[in-house]
Image 1: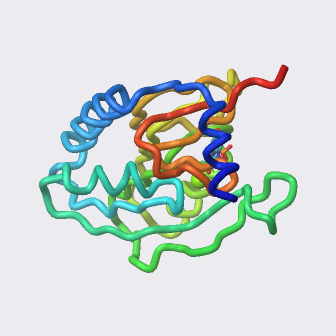
Image 2: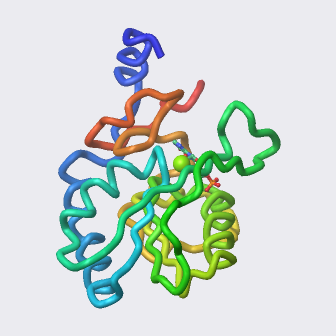
Image 3: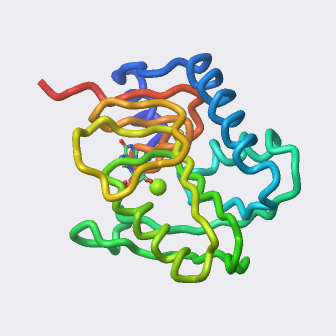
Length: 182
Ligand code: IMP
Ligand code: MG
């Protein structure tokens, strides 16, 4: 995105969760994850690209042995149609018999993470836990629930803290929503 377009977009956006709200929710959810996984020698899988900030901040908070890898699945890529999942990269590390923690930015309709979980279970994971920083309050019956959630977000297009709008503003420390049209 053109830098000026990105700046205009941000100037017209609405702040949903401030940086300090994000950080305090982050500390709380990181604590819950740390407790749950302390003796599991988990495999932590970052869902690229949106999961990168949550996961990058989370890893140094997990003070026990673990493995780390990433996967890339998206249903919004240019090559996808009709909400189909496109796999760009499967994890290299074997998930067989492991407790796997999948870390992503947002649970929207839940289609992506449901497909990811199913495929990791099929590959032999002992258990798959899902951590998302945000859960969209869209009133939909999601095919999957997250085990760990940082913050709820309204049923609008949101960005920041890993989430992008046309590739822009994943780097924001706070969470914004596009202004509603009209
Ligand atoms: P789901 O299959 O509907 O849960 O899609 C989840 C994926 O869609 C997330 O990992 C994001 O990449 C993307 N996504 C869904 N809603 C938003 C949003 O409001 N802002 C940015 N990305 C979103
Ligand atoms: Mg994503």
